Structures are given as structure tokens and as C-alpha cells.
Image (cartoon, rainbow, N blue to C red; front, side):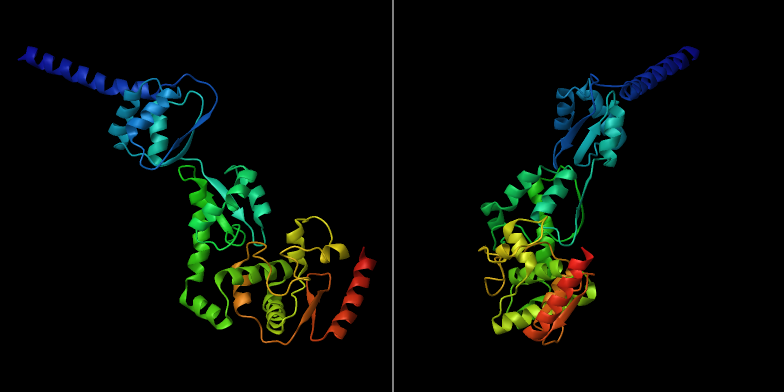
Length: 334
């Protein structure tokens, strides 16, 4: 009897040892060392393929050890994403990170009034993609057609907000989801009905809203500025909006000149009647609502007071007096 007990004890000890060894090995520093690297796990990737990739990149010594740790401890759970793997990280730690989704997430903040150029800077700074590559994609005819965007760029369709990106998703899919948020807003029944009442579509609404966004410094003035533009459109007057001229010239860091105002571009609303070629920035939700619900007013002109606010006029004579008044004040302040 004692002999049988001893044999059982020895068998149990051996089994326990064999069970513990993989975890001991899994907790040891792994791979060939080297600097911190990243591995991207796409959605639907099999755990065996992940193990093979880790071994190929020299981050683990044994594919089977990774499979053992992942399957036994975390039931093979792996969250898709980009994982940073520091020098000497253990197999068990890699399995832990992937099971809990401790992935690298990039933050993109699109601010109200950003245009594609400022968004390209933000997207590059965030580490999501090269800025020039973003601009090329945002003007890609095939991509725009697939998104059903009736324009030659994504301008105006990337709604202002803070977005989180992980590289298991392709960048074009990420941008598509942002654009879809804009479409979803315009699919609301009340918004569709209002556009029908105004005789406007989504593209035209975004175009007008983007001008309001750039002109209005104060929220309380947006609907009145919108009224001025609606009134001008109704009577066939040019919009005379400086931000559209700036956008058409691509000169975002200097004051406009008289020559600029006469330069022929599809965005020069001093020379062209109606809306410009398309949106000039990403408008905020409040600017879109202002474009759809202008204030009841017969104002046709406005000029900046140089403090963020504007003074509005019904006729050109009054407007000219205010222009002279505030231009003189601006000269004195400079």
C-alpha cells in the first residue's frame, strides 16, 4: 500500500511539474531582444498565424509555448489591434496583452472649421498616416465614388469630433466611418424635410454651413449670418465671402488683397453667384443647423467689428459707412 501511495505521489509531482514548466518558461524574457516593435493583428486572424508571425519576427522562441499560454490561460482570446512589444517581453505577457486588448490606440481630433489640409496635419501628427497620403486618398475619385460623395474631395464630410483609431482597421475604412456619420445625420427625417423645403441637398447644405463656420466667430450670430447668405442667394447676389476666396487660393496664412478678390477660382464668391464649388471646411453641427434654419431677417450685408462680432446692414450705403468705420479702427489698432 505504501508503495502505491508513493507511486501516486511521484506521478502527481511529475504532472504538477510538467504543468508548471510551460508557465515558468512563458514568464521568462522571450525573443531575441532588440528594440520595441509592433505587431498588427487583423480581425479574423487565426491564433496559429499570430504565433507564427511572432516567431518569424523574433518576439518569441516557441510558437507552441505561445499557443499553450494563450489557449490554456485565455482560451485563445485575441483582440485585434496593434500591439507594442518591448524588448524581452515574455510569452505570457504577450498573450495577456492580446487577450485583454491592451492595444495601441491613436487619437484624431477634427476641430470645427478644419479643412482637409489642417486635417492632414492632425492625422499625420496623430501617427495614423502620412499627411500627403491622406490628401491623395481624400481626392481619390474611385474612393469618393464608393462613398457616394458627389464631389472631388472629402472636404466637409469629415464631421468634427474626437475619434479613436487602431490599425487592425484600414485607414480608408476609418475615414469612411467618419463620413458615414455625416450621411447618417442628413438621413434624419426632419433634416431631409427641411432641406426639401429650402430646395437644398446635403452637398449644398454642407457648402453653406462651411462658409457660416468660417465667417461666424460667435455662436449667437450664426443664424443671422446664414440669413444674409440665404437672402443673397434668393435675390441673385454674390455671397462675397472672404473665406471662400482664401480657400480657393490655398493661402491660409496671409491677409487678402484686392487682386485676390478678382482672382478666378471655383471658390471666389465675389466673382461667382451662388454657392462655391463645394464645402471649404468641416462645419460644426450648429453651423449646419444655422444653414438650415436661418434667422428671419432682411439683412444683406455684414462687416466685422474686429472683436469677433459683426454689424449687419440692409442696404449698401449703410454697409459702406460701417466698413469705413471699422476699417479705420482696425488700422488704428494695428
